[in-house]
Image (cartoon, rainbow, N blue to C red; front, side, top):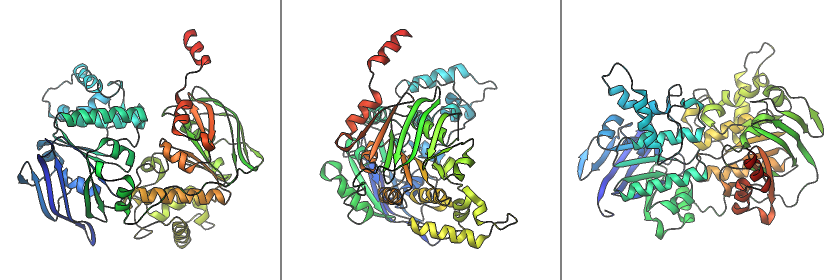
Length: 508
């Protein structure tokens, strides 16, 4: 099967006005292989996948399926050719059940007046038997982002596709869920399914893929067997330059000055007995399995959800915080893990996004926005973050994922913050932008801004943070730093079952 080509692309070109998105791109996919496509945001990966799925039409070039030249005019036609696409951005109907989402096409095609919900749920449960224990009757909006991603994958598996495109499928998954997905991918490949796997995570590519194709600036760079190339070779091919380290140097020595302190925070059952300190100049990490309470603690401190009790002390001053607006006034801000849902306003201008957190800063005495002042603020902060854009009046949706994240970060910086909680700050951004964001966070910490990073990527926490607090079941189970700051120690603290836990389990 390894030598049988199922999809071949040659001379593919695509432009959007004056912007050349793809230039003479080629790609080959063999039967039963897992083929990674790597490249920075803006490299052309999404454009290429959208053409394969019929969402976009190429300006020129050939698409050959099973030795026959084809034109894929729509996603529906792509499905008829046996092509399934799981997009990075979740596109489910939030107000209906998991089962209805999975079998939406079957439901729409049905001529029956009544819907057989029991049959839908039984069939959905069968699909999830190999993925997760998600209840098919649950309404999608009540699921976590990671479980919504699993629903997207389950939906694709029902299409009986021969070619499956997975775009950053593990971005919202736990380590355990990711491993389940990788096992399923290998089983599907062993049965003859061909998988195109898009990821910025080198570990995933080198542990699970057979070959990797690199795109850069809309052009084909190389295709290699993963066994014959190193992760640094792939990264350097992606960015067109040598990146020696993804992480900046850490703080040389621990500072004694405490800039933030949380004392005995409680908001059961979400979290309880949470106390920690943040020292000047350090980057503090929050680790733990998804659902352990990491984000809940940050959002509770920022008064974005729940009703946390306890004491919040910033620069020696005890604060009385009732709303997120109170937090912003004191310089405490939160960058959401859901960039496109909560981090930025996709259809609004870049400048308007950056000023949105405290509009009064760019308004006159009558409350009217002074657009020249707003543009100056955006230009200044954009330069500080090395933001790449065409026009500050253009919508954020036109930017790459990394630059969208920089806009979200610029919005935080617009209020001159004292403390920033960053939830999955580099999720879905390419390796070059990731390195830049790490540098920006370290630079901010060195100027005295408090930085707390929540991340599911253990290498990121280890490479970026000076200390990491591990959260388990809504409590801080331990702290790691120095030589103890390892993946093994973090996972031990995140999943350990101690004697007290066993006693409580027996009592229940």
